Image (cartoon, rainbow, N blue to C red; front, side):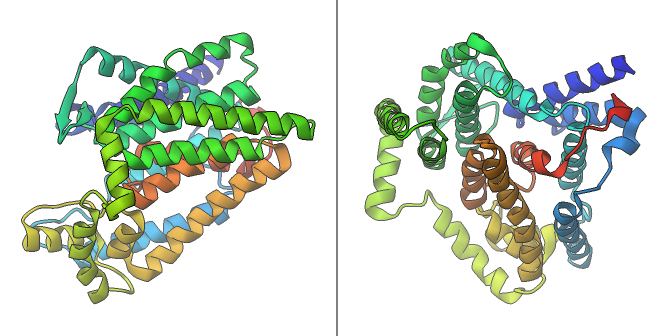
Length: 387
């Protein structure tokens, strides 16, 4: 039994680590992260009945399951000669791993927090590849690496930086002085973020750090003032380093002065007619892909999850999805109120970045954050029967 437990832990850690290489394909669109996710699922099969328990999880799972059912029905109804995939395999896999990760907390209460440190190590490795120029490509002056897009790279790096800083300050894993070694790659990670030119990554990082400084509980008012001053200095220092990137500075300036959205407005203008024509139930993945392909010759993401959900499942599906997000937000806030834990609350910042300007339905980073946000309040006891 102990051997199985250790294998499961290793598989989970590998999955978290591999998220940074989510777009690195092994063979025929089979990515490293997908492979590690399937490997994790296989390791829990001997104890699967413990990993699919849903006690305390019904308010969380019900809305996202209803959304998936509606999405599947829409895919079937709108099936066409070009697109006939009824079941969204990526969504199914992510949802299953999401449930397994939450229940893994029954064995080790801090397992997902340890997994986040493995995610940080993966961020370190891909930063090293960037520094060495391995797998690097430039598009419009902005860096890409191993096929991942600029916002995806930037948000992963920003998320890793948030995890590092909270780990050092609150030290829930009892890492001692060794946790300060996590700061060594930080300047290189900031340079990496700047090279992506990702505005949403910078905003997510800055917002999370500012909220963290304001909400971190201290023993006295004097320490709070010192914390705020120190936090302001750190934010300014980070800002100065990031602004050394010409492409990032230019894009932020354009956003402020001209409202530039990096081409998103054109994409949104294209899909608004589809939403207006099918406002209640949407048209599913199959209908959306068919509409975009026939009208514009390509298939492009809405780069906004709210609009994406409206396209796929209409207002009904959006209500289900917002109910799911509400559970994430309220449980993160409850973790802070009850235990003073900052990380669940601060990780909402990159999540919002993914929702507003990216993709999260199929993004594995979003799902590992979802599992972490929920696990602390959803699993209220340790099930010693499976240890």
